[in-house]
View 1 (cartoon, rainbow, N blue to C red):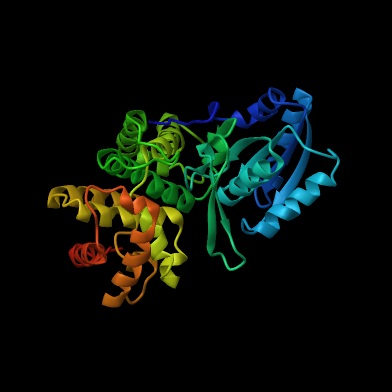
View 2 (view 1 turned 60 degrees about the vertical axis):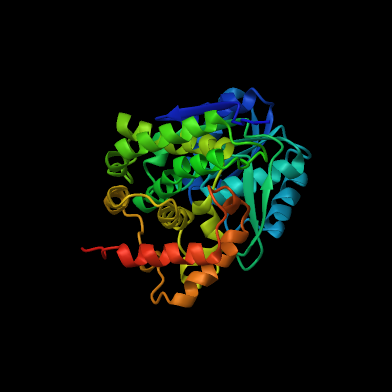
Length: 366
């Protein structure tokens, strides 16, 4: 059996934030907004105006910190004791990955719909039913799953284009992996994020996302921080959020994302952004796939163009040692996604691929 999942609606374009009120009104009249405390002052007036015009009552809660059981409980208490005095019709999550994840967690706890409003393109979480919970030491505790994907995703590309280039680069790193991971999952008979066979539609979206990403990433990245979108930027963001998001969830993941479990065991690499970790993990996966020298040179050249890491040193690991490769390999192969590969891998295979990658890379200049 295959399962293909997606948000009910996806909105993208300049000044698309104005849709938040009408989208909320189609769900109900009472919403809770969980918004990143850093971006909230820049967006609050526009959010409140959109809700007011749509006849929606909104309780706005700023959020900072990590997604932990305690932070979810604090938000729940604020809702239950707040002006809505009970269960809202929807949670509107506004911000980066943490704000969106904690909004998903809150909606899951309350049993109501979730609408995601990303303010940066550092990952493709907005379209997904997944969210991640950490402990107080920022160690992953659980990858949790909503009963269904978000009711709507609203992507204001002028807002996305206002975010720093470093966040967009991380998002490109997260997105570039998806076609290769979905292909491995599909061809190996692996399971997607719905626990069923990877769908051909998910694979097709992931592959289209990769082609679009390669075509428009450099031009789109040049607009990061300007607050202005253009047709190239629109295509880049759609390839990342929509094609990449649906592609990974219904197509499945593989070694590149499994590598985050191993890299998180190396303190310096653990500090790297998710998109940088999985981009490095993809290079390891491609070595395991025995890709040609020409293919590897091409994708490494793309990494150099957009500022993605091609070595452990560029992930922040100052002194990679031989023992480190095995330390990364063990937890990586214990991750569920590692099973979605064309052959069964050993720690020796994975550590050897990392050594081969590290030995083959020309240091970055400039």
